[in-house]
Image (cartoon, rainbow, N blue to C red; front, side, top):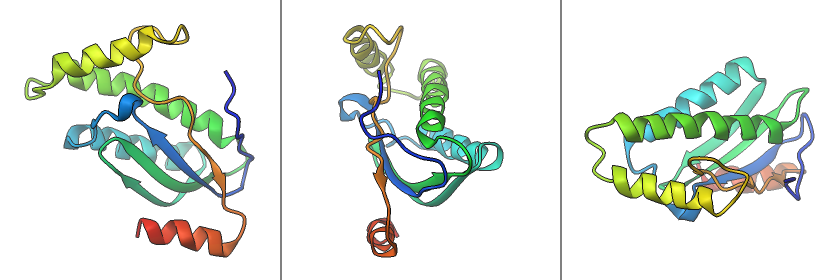
Length: 145
């Protein structure tokens, strides 16, 4: 399946990555740490430049670009990798009071789409918006500064 709005290398985008069903996953610190650690990896190893980001309870907004490569492809791998880490944390964290509920919902969303096996955590699209002028960039940065 192809995302309707593609990204191009080196351009700056405002992206939104959302948990399926708007489930509040990021109200727990452990899941935010997974995101932050993986964003750091992408910055260090995958040519991702992040200008601003915010982690909300069920989605992430980010102003970013990727040098010399496709941003959409990287975000897809980011989502795949973090999904596996989220499931591992949910299954192994004895303090996760919502374990059964979360696993049930993520499995339910996977069963609704043949593309996914096991669990489905992130919505497919990133809703990339090209930030084509300084005023548009400033507008998005002001929202999350």
